[in-house]
Image (cartoon, rainbow, N blue to C red; front, side, top):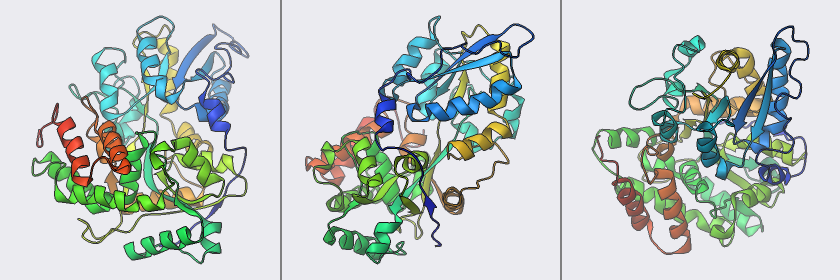
Length: 434
């Protein structure tokens, strides 16, 4: 596997923490502040909401492009704290002060807004959606009616990021086998470097780390299909073994990993205190903004002995959509913006400015590291299983794995017990094969 490197550029690692405290961001312009500039008719201000506090400045630049081409429409972009966003959005969509267009979740977490009648179906509103890949649209569909309720925003992949300078200083290279992976972790530990920047205090991050490190162990897409066919459940020995593998790797994570927050793990990595970060492709823009001297590489973790598949896999998922509020007072203008959000122009801006994988057909990736991640995903895709299929009920699969992983790291349960937590929780609303 070839290694590609990119040099990070920009600001301090704590920028994301400052932005994250703003809900909406204090940097966001007042809606309608520039409405009417260059407009020969009636000016309209659209409110657009998001959970991406770290992307406020970038989205402001992106929407400037839209406003230049549509001088009678101004976009007021407001970002809310990620952990509070879902509740804020539900409240906003039922009142008069909510958004016209909002970033909405995918798969199961989209369904409450669909079932509540808070979003308009877009099948006949945004004709450009007909050109999108079905896998991207699956994250935007209503489960009951099959209609599309959002313009897909991004596809995310999960892999291991690494600091190339630390690897070079310690004579390390990307691992080709599981034995290589374990050996490089041992080498880093002996050198006084934290191998894996993992923060388990935030439960949502635990299933991401689990899939980044062990998806091949339980079988990736093959295991997903077996669950769908009713042939197994989460107490399957392969899935239990994948959780045990996660536990075995705890020695390479920070001490008291359950006391380390996700944002702490980001800082450990970008500051050079940790060599690797198992996480999503969505980290790239932040990493590049956090440390101007950081050189980044990525790799897929080789399958451990006894894995259900004999090759590395890259988990991925459809991450978020642009939804149309059923309560918007400006439906025509909102539809104009939604069509633009489905356009190649916007898709290319997502790729170039946000460093994310756009589902818009025809988008190209000039960044070599981004292209490498996309190529790896195309070669051996796998689902981010608990997010894609197991967020359609309560409790969600990702929440359950977060709780189970925390107990695992604390020593309060073993791998089989963690798998039982997932299976028993899901059995409240899910039966294999149904």
